[in-house]
Length: 583
Image 1 (cartoon, rainbow, N blue to C red):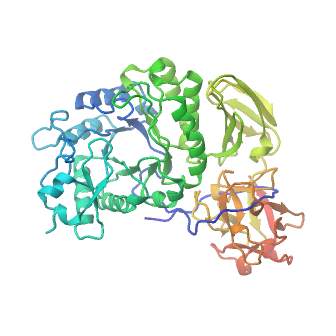
Image 2: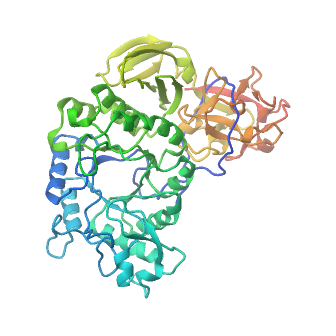
Image 3: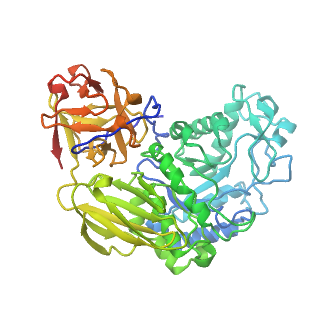
């Protein structure tokens, strides 16, 4: 694992605070093999439409359509096989090879010569200029345990690493947990990961994951790294935000909710339901601090593409796409691509939505009030993206959003991001009517400067207030001074609530555990409105914590890069004075 690298810059006046217990270390980047570092992955997932009945022919049809529809050219470049690719004879678990690994169902996915059926399919996908994904679950098949299959490259056998308890396999069943303290356990996962790499797998979904499966996730993360092939590890499903720091160190993406599909088991349509889409609002907000450069929240595939078979209305389809984009979720299609609804196809191909998703800045929820929810994020260039959602599915509502409430000073030029860049005027309060279950998604470009955002420069060193590690969203990340570089982690946005917002205005400058004693550290935390996040910027250049009356201070009056920030008794020193450098 490699720690995040440095990135960005800041703004004007503030106050606010109170904090939950804080994390002790910044979010570590997932394995640095070049995958999903700057932006979430995009593609098509087989479970949404094929579900329990995949075949090589059906899968190839979808791959062909991914290309012919032009979606590949827009960035949808993964074609991911889900469950039911392997032989599953019954409750005794998946069929296995001589080394205990699942066996491809050759009747559905025929091989060619010495090539396995999955390798043949991967070759087909790669031949179309796409990347190939596959599915697996934790543990080892009970068949391997019963047969005492050898673990490749070791003197050990499957029964020596297995426990008597069942591991998660939702459909085939028959998987046993692995005791990773036993010799041969990691080597078993290593051999399986190498087989996937040899087949040409580029993406691996590890399903049935939860806190009890941390050892499995760790083993798979290590094993995939050892292959030397860039393979993105996706974790599934309904993972708790409490384990966000763990998953974000081991994988590129993690499912934060259940399946988006709403159909009876075994059927493709409807692709989703409003219930399954709308439950993502709270989860996207809760999990937002853990997403960022190198690892991403996964809200599951879209329930958009097949018109009436989607299971949601046209306005709700816009909500589906807009919420995923604002959250910087994986952008995975789930529809039958061979029969796309024209209006849905236009929505899936909306370049503005794709750009909002791919900017790598997960939005914060700034308003949840009755039927109104507002998510917002700020780009490095000062542009804001704001989604105003109506969660009432029975009637339209008119909502008014003061831009200052988001941290955007003054007025801004508003543009509709869904309806062909339609200009909506220049306002300081955005008022709009939103359809039932729909969204108004806009860009807001401040009319002067960047809306009051700029760099906070220390008088003692000439260096900028900086969030450690670059483009990081991990609660508890250290605040420090660093050479000014214009990065997102050096941009501060003041809000009318008195916050000093960081990281694209999605996080807040926070006092550790709401402390009031000199020497209390200052770090980043997700904004929550408490007193530990309220500050007063004074005309003499000092920044005072409203809860304690202490000043924002550079530790020890030092000037070196990486020197931390703390609260200290106000003394007029240069290490307690700050000036704004506006972009």
